[in-house]
Amino acid sequence: MTISDGDIADVFDALFEESPFGIARLDSGGGIIQCNATLAQMLGLPVSALKGRAFADAFAAEDRDDVRAHLAKLVMRTARRNSIENLRLAAKDNGAERAVQLFTTAIERDGELCGLLAHVLDTTERYHLEIASAHAQKLQALGQMAGSIAHDFNNLITAMLGSCELLLNETRPGSSGYDDLSHIRATALRARDLVRQLLTFARKQPLRPIPLRLDRAIEDLLPMLRPLLGAGIGIDTFHAPSYPSPAWIQGASTR
Image (cartoon, helix red, strand yellow):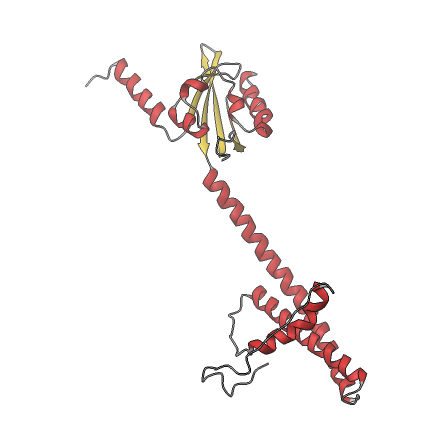
């Protein structure tokens, strides 16, 4: 079976138009001579609007100089093929930008440069995955740092609680010093609970639910909230005189 030149041309036309790459044929000055529908779709413009346009203008303003320098290497014959990653196409009307990788090849005829061929690969999804991966690594590092800091704080709080307990044993209930020491102890206990939560997060330990008296938890927070809110804001709490509790909570130790 003989394949005619027309059949070959049809095959190349199909490859050009149906390629998942955005493809453009450029002149030696970087102007677009021809492009496929994939590239036009990436830019949100019709093919006719791209012909004659500077190829570098298809990219975000911050990347255009890099694209021009990239093309110049081929025009000056310092490279026959070139590629560059982490470029962004110019934003569409909806403000969306695409991350792309650019591959270019010099087109030569009889040893003379007659143009450039550019392939544009959409790497937006991969770019977002890399960002998400970097973010996850930062969170992991933050968790490790939080665990280290929380461990040191836990040692400090343990020493504070020990000293506070000794002073409470030597102070009579009802005296002014006793009330202050009780408040310090209660605050240190809350700080210890927060540190334990940080350690649980950092070590990825499973949480173990415990019974909680909501009214007591709210009352414990009030001494800390009132100074933060300032004198212009007051807090009034109203608790039900009694509320039903599940059988498994009744008789259990609560904070």
